Image 1: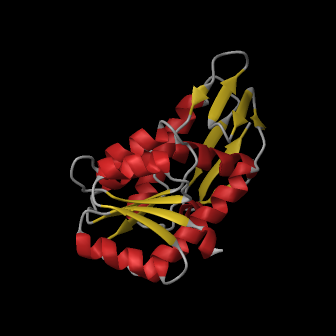
Image 2: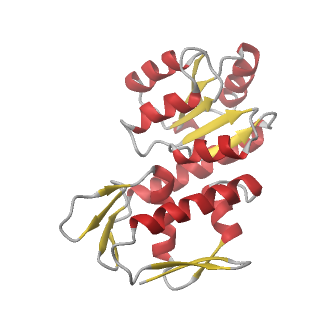
Length: 227
């Protein structure tokens, strides 16, 4: 329920930050508002939080830098980026450093709330997921690690782990591109499609030691993982 969700909102535009805070609080969320990245990082370390909403362009510490520092401590807490940026490279960077969603300004509070609930729900489900096997690899989803035989584990990013999880759970079946984009990214627009392609390429490289494993591009539909 919303009254159990505690949000850290990092937004340097005072008027917008206050509007978001008050709008969420009228819907029973608890909101900690910070106007720069340094304050937000301190609050992250001292508060028990459920989700982070980070503006990309902030003084003292921008949202991407803040997210990198947070991911070094916590792999699981959901992160939503707020930004006026719309360049493909910016969107891809946001996801690659561990962001879970990317909301472009201006946006509606209703849309933000839907995305918060979706991420909280997925986070709770994924925490109960056990270790999975794929070929000669062991995939520890909670730790976001791939282990090949007795070698040292390969650390995955937050987004890589989520995508691999769904590929394995749907092994030998075509994973619909639009379905997975909407499920993991919240949209299937051009920017997120490009981002997903980047992550597929990264996963192929990390699984290359077992040549029986393939992530096949099914043109016009999506991807299929086989081993």
